[in-house]
Image (tube, rainbow, N blue to C red):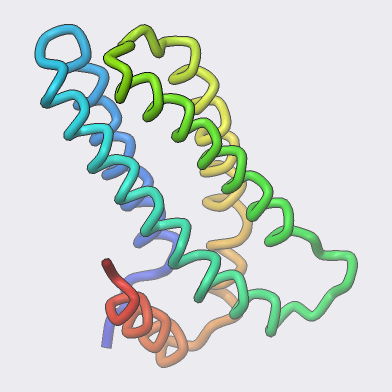
Length: 148
């Protein structure tokens, strides 16, 4: 059995992803190829993280809350789309050899910061209260099975 809370797991993953983004930023001016690789690792990790949330965590939340006025997951999905759009903008610039992405990065970090705070102070905490340890373990199992 895994005693780790969803809040801890997902918050730790947010920090891991933040670290990957910092690596990208550090290499941008020094080693363009390594910067691209770091950005791709960040993007892949973030997409996996969001896929777990949308395919597994959000439906579990919706099944338990069943409140038509609770639009938390709808808002989070909208934010995921904004984040993906911003990732695409940066990725396209990098493909063209344009590393002048500071404004795009700032916009992405603004979206991510607000989004992560919302998840960490709301959805994850609620899920930790709503789920039994066995249900949480089942979520971890399903996430492992869905990993890329």
